[in-house]
Image 1 (cartoon, protein in one colour):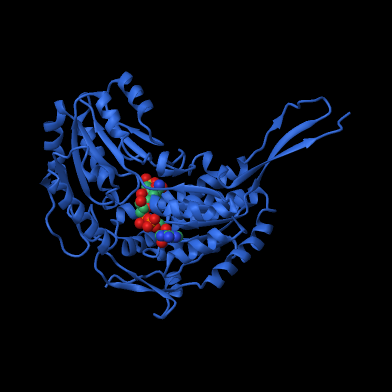
Image 2: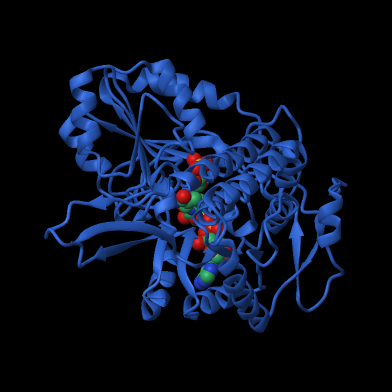
Length: 476
Ligand SMILES: NC(=O)c1ccc[n+]([C@@H]2O[C@H](COP(=O)([O-])OP(=O)(O)OC[C@H]3O[C@@H](n4cnc5c(N)ncnc54)[C@H](O)[C@@H]3O)[C@@H](O)[C@H]2O)c1
Ligand SMILES: O=C[C@H](O)CS(=O)(=O)O
């Protein structure tokens, strides 16, 4: 039994009851424990407490806020192994990936501790001689957040860090499948000196209940959501009555393109990293592969051989590259998707064999056509549909043929083609000869129905600031 050895968490776990959530290890099906949930009244109380705590937090100087965030960063990194093990237990990703996520999540805390001190306004040349104009930046106020299970730590810190750096307070609902990592990283924030009422987690058996309370509250001035486009639409609808600021990090459908002039070995390496990271359960995973006719056989031979080397199993086993998917409904959806794609005319050329528990074998589908359902769906699992193309124009049309616009990837060594294709792809982020591009220093986000706003980089803190214009008149 892979028990939780984190004493902090053991203090959070509780006996099963009517108002508790159970947390299960997706690799083994074993119960990890139960956590208490909050009632609607308690969620509303959390919002009130956050508003009060925010009133004093925003009075602190940027440097004072930065010092607390820097302590939080160091505590997260000091506890990287414990947090990573906990993440693997409740989410399933391999330990090495979990350690990587802890460092990635911590990097946002480190980054926005510094950005807190750069939330500057502007002075503006006046439009008349007797006026002086300037702008100042002020915190949005109480921020509500809802985060997904696939990155149970980083999706919280990618929001909480800029919000706290900006002087906001933060009430977050983590995913019901992966609350333990959330509670552990927030406990470290408290140890760093972040007031408990300023940064709160709330959770309910029904996520809709928390969404309804956060969206309806006039005290909550902003909602920051990371999750599916389906839920993002619902939250945008429910935030309309109170005209909330919104950050939406939603679904993706990334094309992964190999041109005839690509470095095939580099493309295969990028394909493995982009497609099978987190068992294919990331918003920026390669979702459909477009391979130029002239290099199709060379790429497929190497891609199939490389996928054959991927080990599937419990993420605590350091030899494992692909862990389980998060829950039974995800596995069933993937099985139905592969079956339907084969019925529509594709062929399984690697994987596709039944596996125990929540494991899904890394699978490659060949002879996929643009009209097939899988080309329009966010797969969110270790399944790689492969299509062919013959011209740049045809490729751009197929790659952009989606409601999503988060990430895209292509491999080419022709600089003119690189610029033409990079500018023509309708996505928020484009990897060029690169399969994994996420970093705290660059703006993360999408266009079309992949979301609104950006996280990380200089842009990330602006999501939690308001710009106030001050006009000084009567200047003699
Ligand atoms: N763009 C990004 O940065 C990014 C990052 C991670 C995941 N995602 C997307 O998230 C999806 C997978 O994550 P998921 O399965 O957790 O998504 P999801 O939308 O089902 O759930 C996300 C969060 O919303 C909550 N939720 C679900 N229904 C809700 C409702 N009606 N009201 C309020 N809250 C609700 C869930 O409990 C969870 O906390 C994929 O589409 C993936 O692309 C996007
Ligand atoms: O799945 C969503 C994450 O944002 C992916 S990444 O770790 O930021 O690349």
